[in-house]
Amino acid sequence: MSSPVLTAGLEIHRQLDTRHKLFCGCPTDFAESEPQEKFLRRLRPTQSELGQIDQAALFEFHRGRSVLYEADNQTSCLVEMDEEPPSELNKEAVDVCLTASLLMEAKPVDEIHVMRKLVIDGSNTTGFQRTAVVALGGQLKVNGKIIPITQISLEEDAARKASQSQDTVGYRIDRLGVPLIEVTTSPVLHSPEEVETVAYAIGSVLRATRKVKRGLGSIRQDLNISIPGGALIEIKGVQELEVLGKAVAIEIVRQQTLLSIRNELKGRGLEPYQIERDYVDLSSLFTTSKAKVIKQSLDKGGVVLGVRLPKFKGLLGKELSPGLRLGTEMSNRASFWGGVGGIFHSDELPAYGISGEEVAAVGGRLRLSPDDAFVIVADSYAKAKDALDAVADRATEALNGVPDETRTAMPDGTTRYMRPRPGAARMYPETDVPPTPVAEEYIAVLNAHLPETAEKLIGRLMEGYTLNAKLARQLMDSDYLSLFERIVAPGKLQTAFVATFLTETYKSLEREGVAVRTVPDTKVEAMFRLVERGLIAKEALVDLLKWQVSHFNEDPGAGVQSLGLRMLTEKELEPVVDHAIEKNKRLLGEKGQGAFPSIMGAVMSEVRGRADSKLVTEIVKRRLARVSSP
Ligand SMILES: [Zn+2]
Image (cartoon, rainbow, N blue to C red; front, side):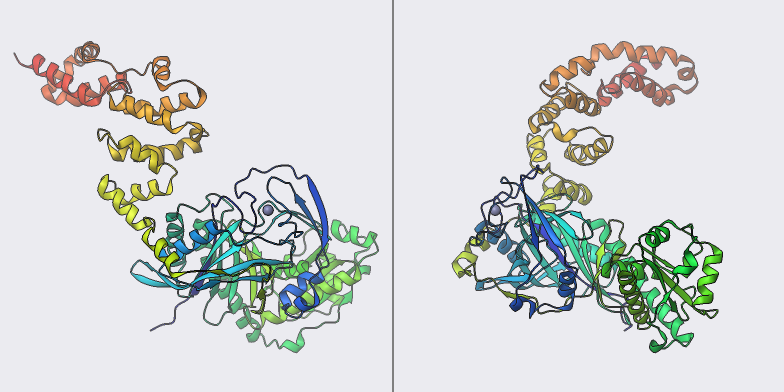
């Protein structure tokens, strides 16, 4: 058996739609409002915590940033501000989490213990995130394959980043404490499509609880990905399901390209010790430079520092993923450490105001060989040196192929360096929150009331309403499932038509900018009743709905009047049909009954939206029979 090109695992976080936050009585549903209060904190983990801090966390700490928190009293209280201890675990959130666990056949723990996970980027006022394992060892069957679910946890969401400057990070704490469910799969996924399908399946199970939030920001998906010969890469924060497969595909190519760069460097005979760490002050070559960043930096008393990267020529400019080159990786890494003003590599020069003569002069000063490259940084000496250290580190790692990293997902599916991959020792017990026992009787009750799974629901929609699988799924994913069930309840309307209208038609109208969501369910239902009673044609519904959006307080009946959508009666249709026959007399003479489609077309183009096509067909047939019979 050939080894798979990819091994991936998923970690899916989804906000729960509970009434209260996880450890206080604040609401989880809120509109963005003006902050009433601001408070500044310094990141300062205690020594005992520092003892357990891994490298990744320590680096964040060493950036020495202050954190500015913004709060308002509708969305947060003293718990989020870390001025009051947390309350007990939110029972409703535990219910939802256990219910989802049971749907995934996971075994609930006997006692839920809240732990502290060290997070010192400032996104938690406490310096840690509270998290609790709720169930273990579940599984999901997806396309006939068993996907092990290793762990299901309950966590508190972090604060939202609102601003960032050199020494201060700003966070809004309204989101802090909203319950999140975290579902982790084994690393058993082997293609971008499979990753996406499994994420979808997990999403469906979570939705089946009817207690998860929707919309952008409510879902965050993390990935761990490796390819043979590569490294384990963590990708954090993919927000949209549709981007997940793309992110995986892009990451495969990125790792493959890094491996080919490694092979190329080895082929060129590069050894790790050849990567230098004595940097050369090149400031004198740029005294009359037209490059803005360099000029600004020199004016402020900074330097231009450079390093030769032996045998890297052409490799820094090599694209790893769309818009991301090895050179970009190096400068991202450098900014992580130092936040430098200007950083440039030889594969992208001359450009940015740096001239060909300056490039040549740098090459001469750094004594480049033909297959060497260089990186230059313009900033204060200390920052430039830190940045070049990061560049040299990253260059050394290029010789190993793919460095272990945690990367941030971008909306387009590409990723950026986030930080080194954190170690495992980041948890310790939260002593402020007592353990929550999970009694067998409690599980029995939850088990007896498990919600309809997505699979069952789709099956029920397909069978009960003769919908195809696609429509059934769309309906389940929409917000209109119960409205649909009410509308078709009397049994006279075509179910597929109603389902299509509430999903596809709604979507395309929304894309046109029609605020269909503002129309209350009762009015929508009333419109369908008009169709049901034969008072308007179903083709007229779109116009009527659009009218309703701008006539919020009026009834659909008024719209029918004002738009002239009332259906024509048989009596009113007959003259229209006769007129069309009259106009097509010659065709009728030539083709006889064969003229039917043309006549039908002529009538419909005149009465579309105001007549039932079945009735029109009847009348046309009847009138034609009369004309053609001698
Ligand atoms: Zn609160």
